[in-house]
Amino acid sequence: MKFIHTFVYPVVALASVALGFAADRTSPDYRVTKSIALGSGERWDYVTFDPIGDRIYVAHGDHVTVVDQLKGEVIGQIGTFPGGTHGVAISTATHQGYTDDGKAGIAIAFDLGSLKPLKQISAAPNADGIIYEPVTGRIYVINGDSGSLTVIDPKSNTAIATINVGAALEAGLADGKGNIFVDGAENHDIVKIDVSNNKVEAHFPMPACEKPRGLALDPETRRLFATCANSVLVVVDADNGNNIANIPIGNGSDGAAFDPIRKLIFSSNGEGTLSVIEEQDAQTFTAIGTIKTARSARTMAIDPKTGRLFLVAADIAKIEPATTSGGRPHVTYIADSLKLLFLDPVK
Image (cartoon, rainbow, N blue to C red; front, side, top):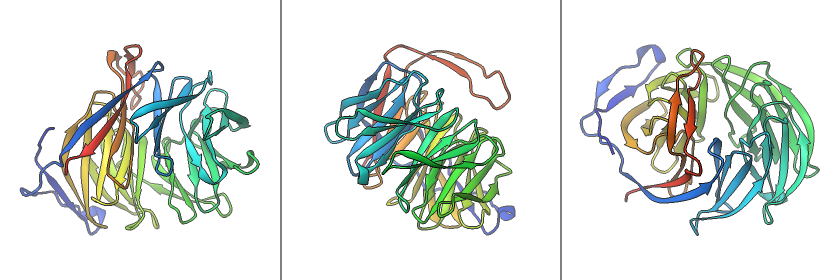
């Protein structure tokens, strides 16, 4: 764990963000308590935690690996899907989960008990992130490069609507109040969608953000936390889109999480760090430290009850620079080195 100077961002309006030093703050103490081998398929994307089933789903390669949190072991695989898996969402009421074949542009429903695929559902090319929306009970598939979302009814396992945004998308989440928020990777904004009519309600620009990657939410303060490719985390008001603060984070972030008990915001960074920010109130955010994790651990999930973080990493063989501005470097991983890390707060 690396201790760093602490920077405080008290905010009244974005234009008046002040930079100060808080000597009484130190990095929170976290430890890796378990490392679980995930087998082959070193190209991975989202990590999804199901708090009801106490399971972690890791989409990697052409399949999804399922880990039992209580046992701390792999309990099964879903797939294979030749076009690569990216996201996972769980519909407990229908005893089904959903993943994707991104290249084929389809979503796949699977049984939570047997983990066997049940049905393929047409989405769009680059089917990627998948969201369970609790108000309607529906599944939303984010078709990244296609710039759209496919809406699935889990009762019939059919696509019932398509929401066209018109620009490339990244991660998304549901706020539990009838809204979906999605990172607009191409337009550097957050897209707000009303699930009652499946219409785009608003675009929230983020001028300081280049290519938003991860997204998290504090439902109590109504604050969205977007991590960006230019090593900035932007705090956004979920109701009016105001940018509250821009906070530096580590390089290579592809995930964000919020701990509702400790009021901590996390950015998982591919450089091998976890940036930690404290939410003091709805207008004040303090960068309180950097936790060393593992190189390539860029995506994450959290157990909101315990604060345990789940990160995925693989051993790196070679890194080649990105070929486009703001693009991701090409990384070659050592075969069969993918692992799931449990990162626990030290009490």
